[in-house]
Image (cartoon, rainbow, N blue to C red; front, side, top):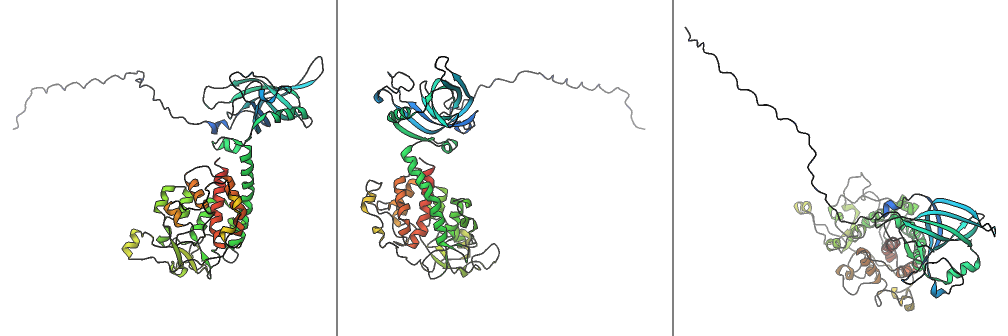
Length: 453
């Protein structure tokens, strides 16, 4: 019979009381201050108001200069202006007609916002079109900075002094000591939108030459049979995959109808074609990448590429030769497979249409331009380096002017438009190989000069 203990069990220990929830304010942790300056010019392009394009005359003020409006009887040495052509005002108060009670002379008053491209002062004037096609001369009556930030919009009010008579326009022209051009596209890109008028005229000529040179180049070197650009002057149809890929990355297809229709043949089956070369450096604009670039290139038969007919392969395109790297640094897969990529031979030289390259332009044309004493260009086949000479790859003192401009581009410096104009005037006389390889570089430099002033 089992033993039964009738003694009561000890009472269970009570559960711990729950901790009450305390509702308090979060602990103050201070303010993290970021003292980096982030320009607000991108947002300032969206300013309230309707656009009104004017020719603005900003006073040149000194410590003892009296702020006055235009005074036709005042000598030019006592009243000077900086003219900004095509400046954009954002009108917030449309022109309201006024009339003097005694003379019954009509006038206008209004208000607008001004981008922070310059500081407006009371007494500045601008010329703009009014009423029936005539132009009026307006005088700023008040200016106000709208915020304490570095990039701040200015609110201005103005009234018309008189119609733009020949006497008033002549007086403004005589008193103008600096002429600037307002470029709104530069403001949207975060650049200084005020450009010297003489420089802007040079850039305008380059802008006009860009489209015509690109169209002519595509017409000369694009094959209607293969629908892609081919290296000229060669006994076999020769294709440069690196240049074709660079064209699609550097220039929009809208720049040329032939560029939009150009085929990019597939050479990616060979790992050696993925090596770093000159066009990679130009597209990425990375001068440090030039240290890894393969400086030499030859030709390889297209039958050495993959037999896979998919993806527009080069082997079945009908093209016989492909520009191929020489002494390329092999990938680890090539080393494991024991593959040794070898180019067969090099390109054939082509002659200049104008004789020697040194005779393309007169010596007087280059006087006063940058890099005095340097040749304009080197022949593409002056040595065994790809496109540019060994002087460029080694960065020595014997580079051509084109190679020195490429250095300026890679380092992000301003490119001289005068020297680019010389290239535009002489490129038609270069040899076929020089036109084929150097013209895309010149077009790239023109585009960089237009966006870097």
